[in-house]
Image 1 (cartoon, helix red, strand yellow):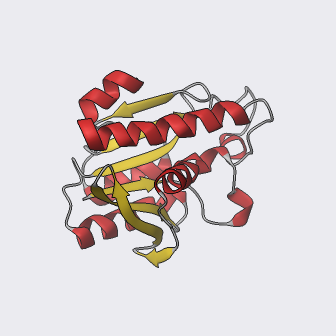
Image 2 (cartoon, one colour; image 1 turned 135 degrees about the vertical axis):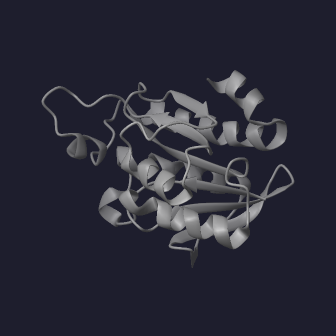
Length: 186
């Protein structure tokens, strides 16, 4: 079994913001694989299904970004998975240009509070992740305002393509492993 978690904030006002790209990636996976993400469990909205014949749980934590680790810890404990190989986290990255994706097997939080909280709850930084670039904040712009802001008209098609590639990367991880996916998408 694989648990795939997209990070974001749960309220309506955050729909479509840069910080919610992880939720959008889960929505894309759910659409692509016809999985309903509607059940409320483990401080998340979850959906159960299969991707490439493998059982998956898609999850969108409803704890708000900075407490995402609470939901992830609950999911990992309940389903008794090996979080180092059976957990994938998708989230926004301001150090990547908009639309670029980067896969990693481990790493620091890089200033991302959601990832920082997951690392604190798991006790390590060794879990699979797909970072989706949302671009650097403009000079003299508040970081929170930037990541909680919506994509511009010109960014939307780029981000839609990034979401499709992120979903495809998950498929490759599940079918062929993280190494092949990293070679293909990084």
